[in-house]
Image (cartoon, rainbow, N blue to C red; front, side):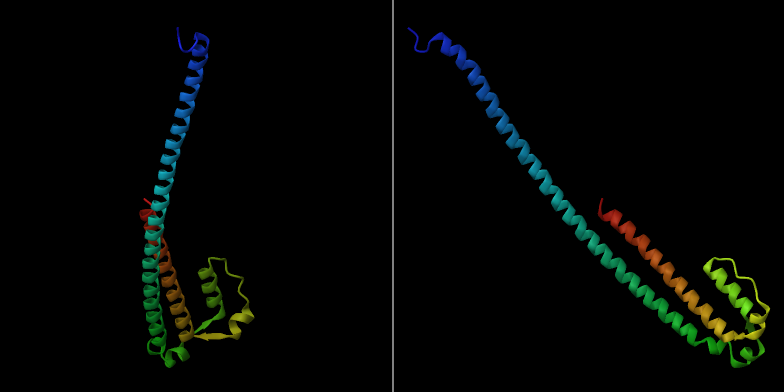
Length: 165
């Protein structure tokens, strides 16, 4: 005499198989979820490290840029103050610049074609040589500041790329 009839045995085997598969499925899903959560946490930590490195690099680049621009501005102001020494009053009286030159210079600085010259404009006003020297000096100062800004931007881009690797 058997304790469990053969019909119940046949029905019990598939039920046991389904139960085992379900148990394996749930355990496997839990394991995969744990791996996923660990990977996500690792990425969050890596992103925090990269953000910190980028913030430090940004602060360093900005500090260097501000210091360099301050030096450029001080040098430019000193040079502008020296214009009267290098272009004395006698030179201003002996040599003046007409409006046509100023118009041409301004157009070249802007990268545009100059407007047509007007005779009345050029003859009416002469500009002192010292004023032209001061303006050109200020323009070069701005040019050096822009160049320094570009260098700082290039350094910042390199630092951001290095920090994110």
